[in-house]
Image (tube, rainbow, N blue to C red):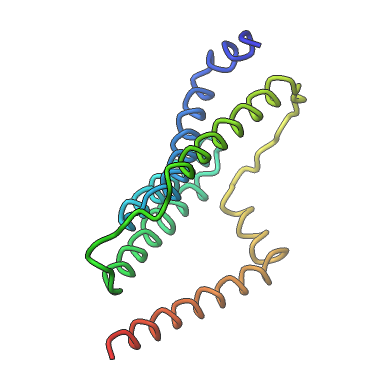
Amino acid sequence: MLANIADFFSSGANLIFFVFALFAIGGAIFMISFTKVVSMVVSVAVTFLSLAGLYVLLEAEFLAMSQVLIYAGGISILMIFGIMMTRHDSEEQDMRRPWQSALLWIGILGLFGILFYVFQQTSFPQAEFKAPEDNTLEIGKLLFSAHVIPFELMSLLLTVAFIGAIVLAKREEE
């Protein structure tokens, strides 16, 4: 079992993957654990940037740049503007009880223990992957042929969410 761990960490790419994965998972856990909204946004931004690093390791540079520009940049800034435009009580209080935090950490440790055991006992087949010459071209072909309806539905959903945010902001001014 420990030989598998030593083999895993002997490669630099695996070590970098492990660091990015820890930051992504840690950011997500901190996002649901924090009580201050700005801290939650920073945690989400760390998760988004870590996912972009994982995309770089997978040689999906277009997805990595899209992740940084759209999610880590745009969505995080949009969330901060949303926080600034809404009213909040001056005093934020922690609504959780101590036993909820203890159950959270027990659940996290249990999940990681189960995942560690399963990954150690599983033998993954080695397959040859042939990457396309131009990732961006292939993504564009798939996006505008096979996945054009989900793409258009997502743009419609984002437009409706944006209009809803404007309506909510205008109601709050009055």
